[in-house]
Image 1 (tube, rainbow, N blue to C red):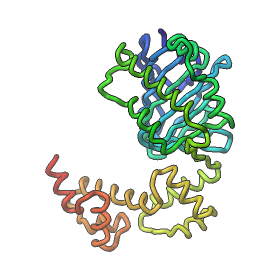
Image 2: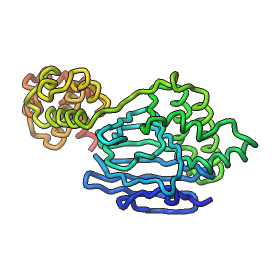
Image 3: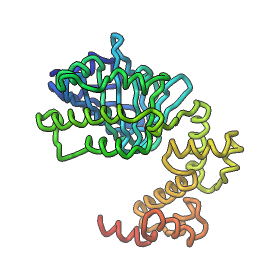
Image 4: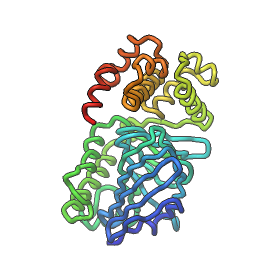
Length: 330
């Protein structure tokens, strides 16, 4: 069974094949902001699973389906964030433990990784081939993959599900390290069962009960949120209230808070605190002769006591203890 991802879609000039065998391909993406690796396994006719390990800020997706191919894709974010333009000027954000159901018809354009990393798995199904394979396997499979695609992909935008425990349990099985290499016979059969389990579960739940979220934001909103991020991380000597930031960037406080958390994974206050403390932690190790109070001031804490309390809340130890412990490990 040949891996036929290139027969189904054009991946683009920025994707390079590093390894290719009958049932496995390793693809590399490079960008000025970093690199990413996609490891793709063919587990049955019409089904590929792709493990993505991205360490970059953004990349340009040139993905485009070939010959009117109909596909149904199930994406799961294990760590990080992924932000995509799903329609002109409309962005979708998928965060940890969310599931995205997509037909890949609008998969070309800019892709962003706000936390500069993303780890996840995608199940990629070519409708006709997988249906035939499943029907033969079960002498008539009860799930129509095409009907699932029509149910969840109705508005030319991905359908995102959040907080479904049943799906979380099924998807956790895709990351079983002890399964070894999915192209091996035993592992391949395991992943076939997981794909079947996933399809059966998606058939049983209804669109209304699946806790769909609509993490869609307009281009102007995303631009303002990224400007706010640059503002609070660029000048650590200044502190802004939610109201001040909202007024500065002409955005409602509620939209600003919700969008920032969806994109960066934390509230504005908590994100800024963690950013300051992580920067201070690096300074403690890079220059061991530098006074702790001087480091505190450089990251926006004039009060040593408040700096120590904030540092302990993030790192679990005081700044002095952190420096001693890390120096001892070296």
